[in-house]
Image 1: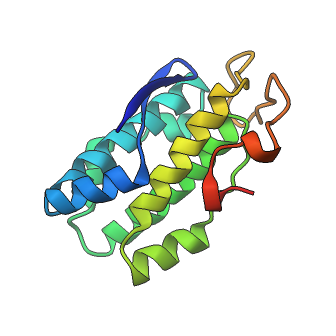
Image 2: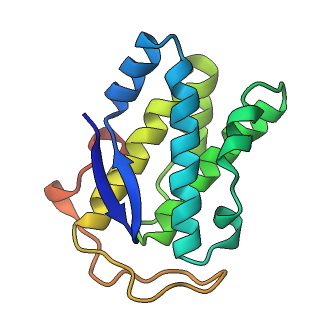
Image 3: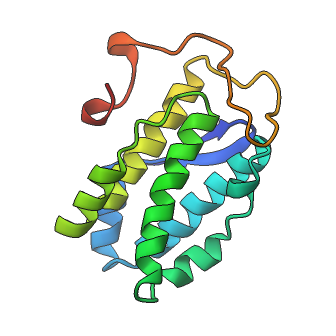
Length: 162
């Protein structure tokens, strides 16, 4: 089940990686196009809130179209991983999203989107555990979380978070 949250003033959808996989299977993969659009839109909006011009210029529709073009789809696959890392850094969490694992999952199982959704959902959870941006960031500025980063057993994330 998906839950609507606000991260840095942006409405995002916290969704289980299993739900994304299940909806992808039930719809014969069509849901993944909608998922790609939604995730890129969320990351674009978060980038705009933090004055990150690279993220703010993301075109979600173009990301979906790129999925159909050989070679370009590989570039798009890589960029979505780097965008997730960027969102993690902007929200003050630190980029623990592994591009290596992202590519291994993409090449050998095709389940990279489950890992991506899991990383985004845990980032959204982390943001809601008391870390909020104090002021909008200038381009290139590194965020400093308002509260200390959560640690120990209360950190959501399962096997992908230290």
